[in-house]
Image (cartoon, rainbow, N blue to C red; front, top):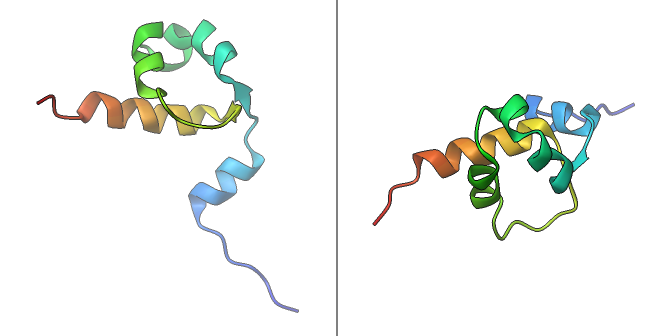
Length: 69
């Protein structure tokens, strides 16, 4: 019997609860320690209806590290 190997990110994202972006925005300060506007900017243009907290944290970190030209 074959066993599929998954990396850590896939394992966490498949078992982690997913939330609507509006719900995550409502709790941006508590969950991510950022204002709602930062979360909106980080998630701008991203398709999808439901997200895990880990996915959004990663997007916020990328957004905050992006160079402004």
